[in-house]
Length: 184
Image (cartoon, rainbow, N blue to C red):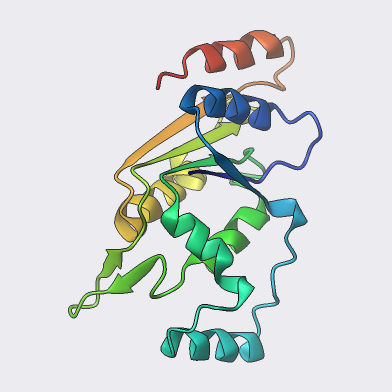
């Protein structure tokens, strides 16, 4: 199963268009998690106490844990996240906070290091940016570090189209060139 984590909100999202072309090339069953449709619980003391109690009892029957279970069992993961305000949309950060579940996506070794529990062999990160300044560490780098060091997904690939809102840019040409370079 391919898990699509869709952080795009615009109807004609350029990022989603690229991700969709990638999915066509991956050719498999896709489960889409559309982040704008999720009402993440408020992370307050009461919620954390409930969540920590469930984790301590290894009781993951609450549907809240379905996001983490789907992430852990995915064969491949595609994240579609436009570059907003020097990073990715806040909903993606919320998603990450809620899939980090001890006993589902990772556990700790006796020495205190994370031990991955995720099945995916590759994570793709599709992104677009209006400008040309897109430092890796502000978005993709964070996701890549988590994937490789926490979830055990060693192969990560960024697929990006940048400079889309620069005056005079040929948006279609830039997006199509990005799509043409997708090599599976």
